[in-house]
Length: 99
Image (cartoon, rainbow, N blue to C red; front, side):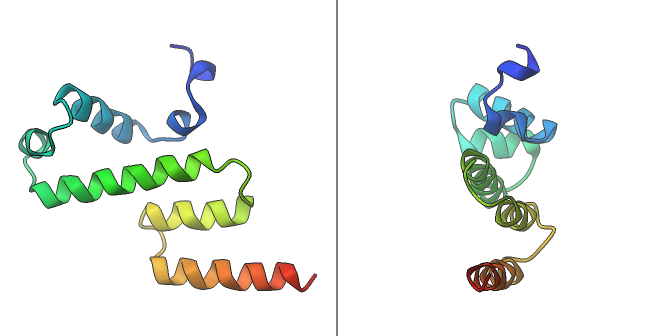
């Protein structure tokens, strides 16, 4: 499949995320099977799946402000903690409303 034919949410994922999705689908959605394949615990796989869901949801919000989307992506990717992300987004929105 050509890169330009991929859905926007899929094109924004990293290759390791796509590999995880492939393994998840091939395991028929069994988190236990995926945990065994990666040799990690069930909660670890659940956390990774939750983060992947967040990434996909963020990618679907095309109309969102680019700065806010960037901050959210950084939080989902563990580049920024969620509390700091909330503070930055709140301050940005207040500043933007004041303009």
